[in-house]
Image (cartoon, rainbow, N blue to C red; front, side):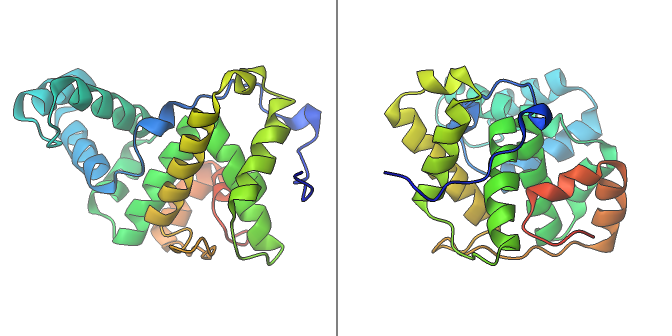
Length: 210
């Protein structure tokens, strides 16, 4: 029995948005995200980027159908970013790039955003440095009370979702390989642009308020 309950948000503050498990098709994909961002900044047309990527197999995927699925997933994340954020992804340092991609994923998927805020960041602030499988399972079961769509998720998909999110966290350097939570520092340019416009975005990272 899972007993280490995570404090849920009050019902009045819950985001009324259905959860999607579409993120299970791929993990962080930092290199591919930067590549697509660069092509979009130059072409300013996602259809043109898609046609070019498929024609040249820019993502180096074996089958066309898999290539199309990967492009659709990554581009759907990048569409949450503005021009300056895309430029940070293209030309920023490694830390900025990881932060931007993680931010785009949280903006794209409310499930991941809530997990990042309510579990990862909360544990960091409570000085509980290790993330474990049980944290995800408790979170998932609590959210089933609020999101009926989660009751339709199969055990296999649920396990896959946990694996992919934990892999993303590691690839974004938010956790170590052994799931220890890393405090995240931000470049001043990143903070001044991203958090000055949408200050709640900082809640997706294990850090103190800026």
